[in-house]
Structures are given as C-alpha cells and as structure tokens.
Image (cartoon, rainbow, N blue to C red; front, side, top):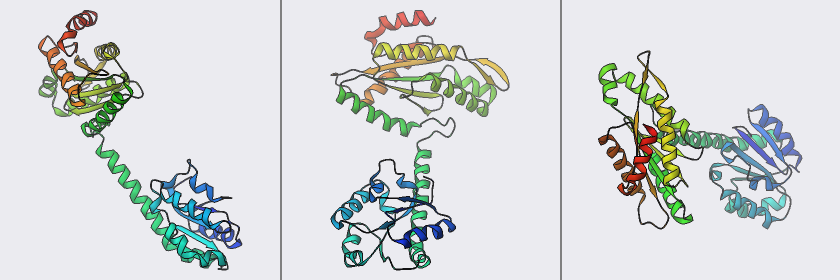
Length: 320
C-alpha cells in the first residue's frame, strides 16, 4: 500500500464500485476488500490511509466491534471512516458514529455526490497522515547525531534503560563499551575542526561496522562513542572490544587528504544477573575503565571493576 490510499471494504452497493473511479481520478490509490476484516489485518499500513469507505450489509453488532477494534490501532484515530448503506445503516447511524464512524451516507447517492461529500474527510485524512509522517521523521532526527548519523546520547539513554530492564527481567547479561580516539585534540589543533569532524565520522563508521545487528552504537559527543551489547557477558564484551580495537588500528583514516593511522582506548563493563547495579552504574563503570586505560598508556582495552585486572593484563598482552 502506498500513501494517499483509500480502502473500500465490502463494496456490495454499486455506488461504492463506481465511486472508486472518481477517487482514482482524484489522485487516491484505491484498494478494494471483500470484508471489513481488512481493517484488522496486522499487515495493514494504517499510517498510509487517507480514508476508509465501508459497505454496510450484515450483523450490526459484529460491524460495530470491527470499527471499535480498528480505532484502537496505533494511528487509526486520524483515519476517516465513511459508512455507506441502506435503511439499516441510516437507522443505526448514531451507533456507528459512537463506535468511530465519521460519516454515514445512503447507498442511493450518485457516485460523484458520494465522493464530493466524502472529499473533505479524505483531505483531512491525507493531511493528518502527512503531519504524522513529518512528526515521525522529526522524532527520528531528534534521536540521530547530525555528524555521524548514528543514534545520539538521547537515543542511547532510552535504549540503555530499556535493555537494562529487559536484561534484569530475563536474567541475562548486558555490557557496555565506551570508546574514544587517543589524542584527538591533536587532530583538531593540527588540521582544524572540519578535518576533526571528518575523522569522527570515519571512526564512527568503523565502530558501527564492528557491532552486531542488534547492538546499539551511539555518539555521546566529541570523539566519544558508546556501544551497548545485549546478552553479552564480560568475556564476550571484551572480545568485541578487542575486535573493534584491531579494526581501528588496521584502518587508514584520511585527514586533510593524507592517510593517517589512529588508535583508540576502550572501556568495558557488564551488568550481571542478580547483581544490584543500575544502568547508570554500567555506563559509569565503562567510563572508569576507559580513563583507567588512558592513564595506563592509551591504545588499550580495559574492563571495570579492577578485580578484572588480571584478565585486563592478559587482554592487553594480546593487543600489544
């Protein structure tokens, strides 16, 4: 289904079939359905609908229930519903309206008259869906980092809370990696901020390419990135960080048209099942690990808390 679509469900009345041509001439994409159950189809793209025309001829109680259930769907409140029927529909118009129908019309109208009376509602439906799509795009943009196109800190914070709660409920690990570029200030100082922005974009692509499909990699600000790994224990998170570390070391970045090698430091932390730690603790501990790595020479992967020092030392030896 494409945008500006109109569904005509159960077109038993001839006027509905004839109206389809007028609607198509008016720029609407018309789809006919043999049953009202189309409104409850899980595959129906409600957000693309400018309106629905229903042919009334059946069990009123069942029809009212379909309308109520459709109105409960996300985005369905802005979709106009126009019901066309005989005397049964007209006598029960109040019930249909109270269930969510916007307009009840007699089936003996001429098709051009029907379309003319329906047009204001269909225009409203098109406008509503256009505004909804614009708002959705704005919401998505507000969750994206302008420089890299990755999720921003706001999106990361939401994903962090959601994943931490999920991990707690199902008793699985959740890990976080905080990473930034070593000596990034020197790039800005030597080449200028536009070149620094270019390096951040390139670096973000490398880290993003290292993640699993269901992980979140976000830019927190500056040259700092966060990587959230669902169902990853400390060993798995360290392995992922080590893999990304090698990818960064093996990548040639372009700075002012010249090839440049960069290094990065990685801080890793995990929430374990049954351990009383918050989502904020997870990120704070990854931050501590990152700064511990900076203090111990940079270009390194560190795990926090310090009781993992022996494992860190082993990891460091593999990365050196």
